[in-house]
Image 1 (cartoon, rainbow, N blue to C red):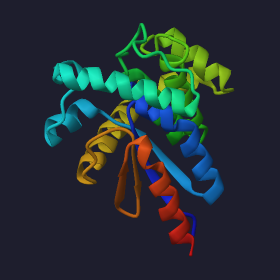
Image 2: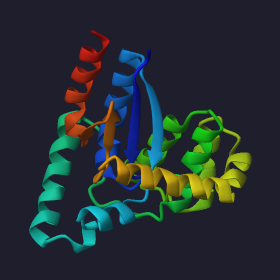
Image 3: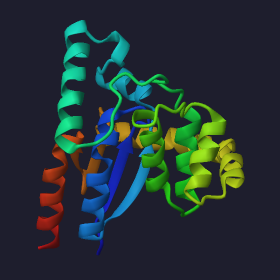
Image 4: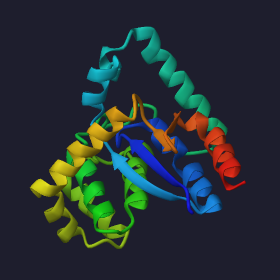
Length: 201
């Protein structure tokens, strides 16, 4: 039976962006399925004791930039340390990804394209027109997905996914959950790969 990974992410998270390509490669290599769940980390931080970036101590904010530069250079990925539109209003983008997942189409690719647009291309991913362009570039039926994203059913699903994350003890993004075990952060992807290998026997 194929492994399922519950993938809890923020569409504002540079760490999620930095891990995106490697995560996709791991999923492909192991034939795993992915439940793509952008969730409301504002609610999750309030429950788990986390702080949004603007409320963190100056030392922590400064070190975050050092680490982002290190990982950007290590991975050879384009990344703007202080993108023009960060933090983007991510509620619509998140619901668009949820709608894409519920439609059974490429939610993983769309989520990662949104992250790339914010962190590598300096595009405003809180802007509906930008999101429409990203979705269409992925070959998605953007109009239908936007309509779904505004529905009460998708809004409820987004909230339910956030509640599911909290019930699973998720506290940060990205979090990859396999058989109830949390792998938090793109720097834990090697451990996720090992767990998948072990699971396969």
